[in-house]
Length: 51
Image (tube, rainbow, N blue to C red; front, side, top):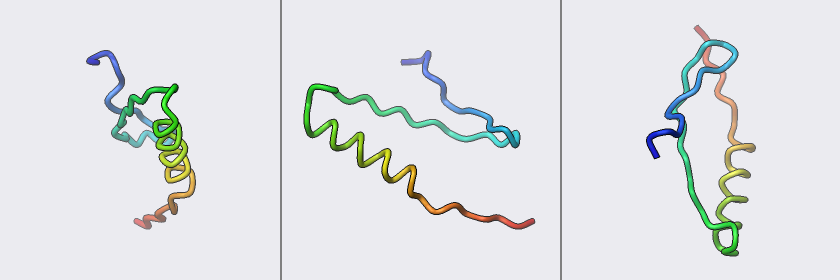
């Protein structure tokens, strides 16, 4: 798995760590976990950091 990206740089030139999750698409529990992970990522509050 060394070929997977470990970090990415966003449009503001900020670097972010990447986490890869590998689950079976045929397993109902795995599908529910994928949905939960997506839901948490998309509903996570945005932190406003002022300089």
